[in-house]
Figure 1 (cartoon, one colour):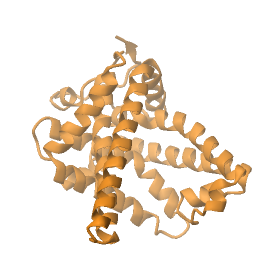
Figure 2 (cartoon, helix red, strand yellow):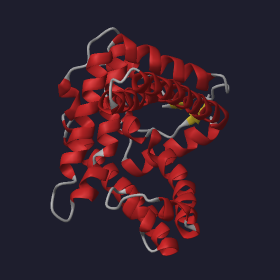
Figure 3 (tube, helix red, strand yellow):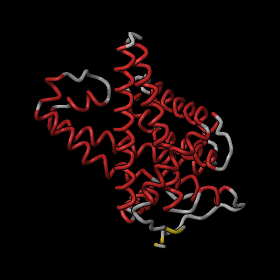
Figure 4 (cartoon, one colour):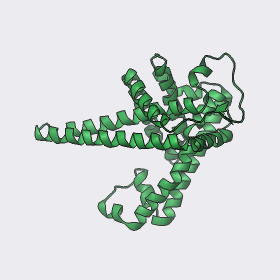
Length: 276
């Protein structure tokens, strides 16, 4: 397994590929994204452990979208069965993915716990959907401090798990090593990921401006708030699906391409990453 170093401009290519591949199979990819979100939402309904279970499913949901995007990029139609791809690749990988999920849940809840030390848990309650966000709460200094601390801590957490599901699935790397290799790859390709993040920020801001103009037009035509709200939700879901579609291309360029591994007869052994 080699670690590839890519130029900063590759970040733009990742965004372009994510959008392009999504539109090759928009219904299939959007449906799969909706199914992953629905599964996580249903998991939150479990008594006591619901939120933790939902969080632990995120690496598996990310992997499902990565595999689906890889399928779409090769001209194949992703199917709903990919939702369970993390659980159909043998006992060893299943255990590894479950371990990744547990580690992510612990990491995320730890971030929320640390933020609660600042504002008494207000930000955590709002973020996890347990409390409404009022103007008074949003403007509180403690709430804003907790929000920025959570963001600061979540960035390295997300980088640890960025490539980890793909490394477990395609390279059979143990969970702890996968986390280490993931953050090393993100760090070594820091410039490309900065460009990638800024480009997606531009896409989201541009889409937000466009949907705002559409909402204004619908209101002027008297078509009602329901249609405008539906358009906003649909756009947000579509953009989120595009974003997750692009993740596999960051993995492909940092490590061995998924399509090359899928065409290989043998199972690759985990190895230390080497710079290219």
